[in-house]
Length: 282
Picture 1 (cartoon, rainbow, N blue to C red):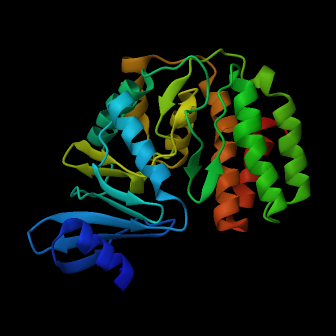
Picture 2: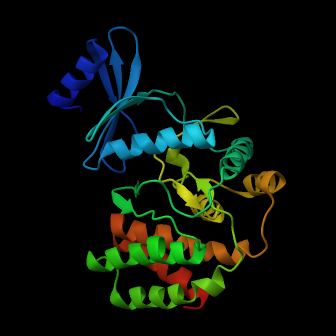
């Protein structure tokens, strides 16, 4: 339930009485509710321990710069986010996959001169540092994989032997990621709970972790979360093309979400992390 303080703040912002509060799925960090108001408006209310102003700024960037369908933000404070309610579900059919491919290909066409982002973002509860960086292998090694592995080891979640294997791979990233990608805007957390669907299309994207990256990081993550299958990749390649070597690089890119999942959820993700390192020969 929404506590009394939050309810009072929402009612004060809306200048309307709350008539119903319904918990929604997808609150991996914090809680998410639909709030019905006496004037017949419906909004989504999110509370969290992280600074929700960062999420609001990410949503604004994805909309203004990338043209992505995201909820309107109505009100934000560090611990409260009030957004547009969009009806939908998380069912992903081949038709939805094709629409998802169209939308991500268009998003990835938004480019920058360097890798990074205007401000640090979040993946779940954790900070994503985004200093503007010329080289992709350097950025991915220092600010994504290496940073996450170091924090996970400090947290006591990543065993030292796996951390050392990741360090060995990170040292080879200039050779493993030598395909010279263009910095492209990515959503950063595309999985079924963050893609509201309806009919044969995506209605809205939620909970971004965006930055300018090799767009293959988005493809690798969407494939890992099983929201992107054959229909997705066939359409995406029609729209945006494909660099040779993706089938090898995707395993490198999937290490980052595996490490962040180890940080968030613990040892359940250690086995697939180790298996991916085995696949890569590290």
